[in-house]
Length: 227
Image 1 (tube, rainbow, N blue to C red):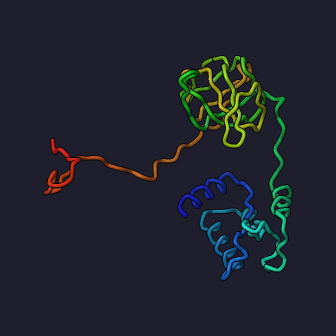
Image 2: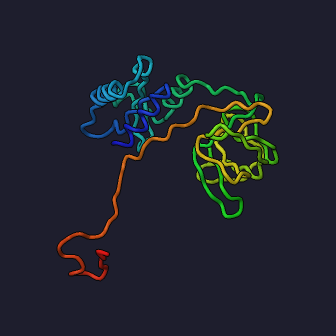
Image 3: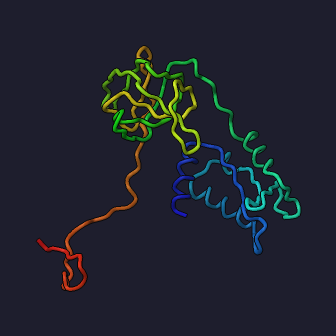
């Protein structure tokens, strides 16, 4: 799928560690070995490095709740422990740098009628609390101080008010009227911006215009005007 290729390419460019899970191992006509080869070809096509090409593989049936490290269906066990064990073994543990100066980068924007513009992103370093006086480092190189009026954390699909967030947390922050994607919120005494996020160009383009067909407004009730 195009979206799968796009997201995978982004992950590989960030030098993240991939884990390949071959699902539906119980299906008639399953060909897990061939699928692993196809995944390897895709990784090579997308520019994966040697370490990423040496990816771990887990074979599973999500519907049956089974998994194993072997493509042989008879080795499947009613547990997802192989997947969890692989995550713990191969994915680097996060670094706890909550005691360092704040760095929070805006990745998405939202708007609330009560609090105005909301910046959504990840706390890369440090700790942030409601009421803190912080500085946003703008894309044009300027800085602006503001006070954090509201923090929200993500719990499943819910967004709940919180009083504090630490490094690694995904949060929504409000308190500044003008904040943009890619800008960094920092401790006023330690103004160190993160690299600016690169926003990809749109992959879909649409043009809207009047109906230039030789038969406009001949049928139907929603007519198009040529003026």
